[in-house]
Length: 148
Image (cartoon, rainbow, N blue to C red):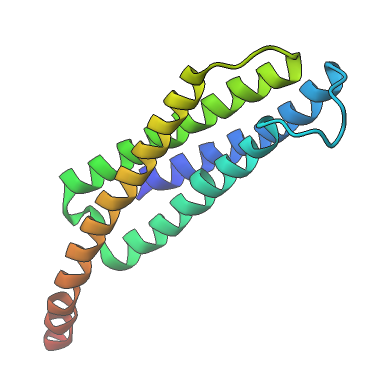
């Protein structure tokens, strides 16, 4: 649980920093206000996918102890976080190129796609672990009731 809390906190800090970077980098480079750049969505990706989702997973962990399947939980945690980091890094790279007036490449989109695939794979593993934990939960609840 501590790992989830720490990761969530780090994403909160990164999300806030990404918002500040977006505002200051676009001003510094005289980027037209209101024109789209992917830098504008980095902070929401980090805050939503990192900070908020991991806080929700922390609550789910507290209730269902999904880490009871440690290998599944580790796969979820690392796949998901690698995906969020890769996706966010590509948003920053592509957005920075846009602000600087430079040409982007298909490679950036391809790598961002890999990041999204890792996020999706992590969520699938999360639900497999959650399903196992929920299936085991009634046995735990009845055992606790019998002990009381």
